[in-house]
Image 1 (cartoon, rainbow, N blue to C red):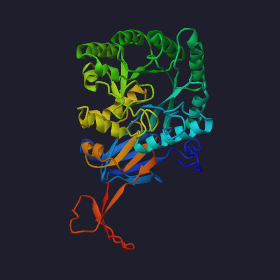
Image 2 (cartoon, rainbow, N blue to C red; image 1 turned 135 degrees about the vertical axis):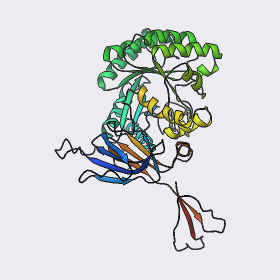
Image 3 (cartoon, rainbow, N blue to C red; image 1 turned 90 degrees about the vertical axis):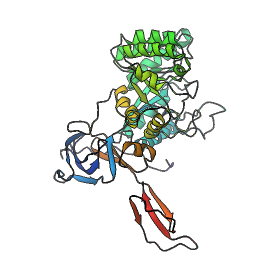
Image 4 (cartoon, rainbow, N blue to C red; image 1 turned 60 degrees about the vertical axis):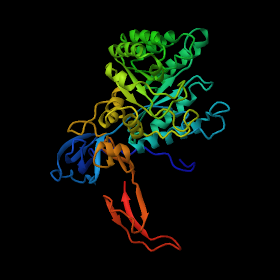
Length: 432
């Protein structure tokens, strides 16, 4: 985001102003089951779904023609790092700590959220360190970014302390409780570097129980004994527990990893894997054993992890890329892969289920393409709907020079433009 660009402002809420709920008609959209439909949105819900051409917009409502687009429930981002995003090129990464100037953290967090919103993620869980010498400062800035993004997408900050046990962890315990009071929507932790990983997890679960918020722990998951203790503790907690990225599980013997996965499943612990790479709290760049976890009944979601920071300087933060990697390298069917960034990701975040059916939340993503496999391969043009409004739009156009070798490609149109000085004539235009 350029330094002189304006922060997004909360949109006007028509219902609050007495103007009634907004309405939007999405016409001629293709669904994953092959049907072509009209979808009418009123307020933040899907009001009706009918055959193409059968629905009319509500009076004064807007209309978007989705001919050529596949309409899907919007994905969510279950594992991002808002405080370190886009810090790879700043002084510090690789040679020292990431700079945590307040305005800079807020700018990076906002830019990261907008990038991932443009990719389609209408909700984003952002992990924020709270005891790396900065106290709650970075969390306060991410909370400000959350408020500025109201109406565009949901930024959900998670407070992540490093040490929680013994005398050295006293400050971390106090900060964690204060972070929840300040507005953190979940509590996190980093059990692996703590001298007492089980005690670390116990503190996090205790704070979560006190405040009724979910838990999201960073762990490699390479210690089956610790995972067993975590599962036992989590089974007694009334709120959701998620762990990730759990790449260490893939390095355990299959029978050992299988038993650990069964304990996690029985306790209702979800796992977020990172197909695009690691994050600053991960000890390796591997990926959790998705097939083994799913076979054991564990809810597995996929996140992006590092977004152009020291842990992954080329991170894209694109949920469709995470799904693509699960399908191309993880052996999942396209529908299962998209479910990991869609329904499963929303579930681990505690968000309501989304279907393209009447009565469900109007959280939708339209991607140019006809089938899900093609969308995961070439997901360029996208239209993002949050709370019944189009909040982001990306349009990709590829042009080829005019030549006898040009192919008659689908969705191709020729444009006539005067040739530039010494340049080729404009030829076929392919919209992707």
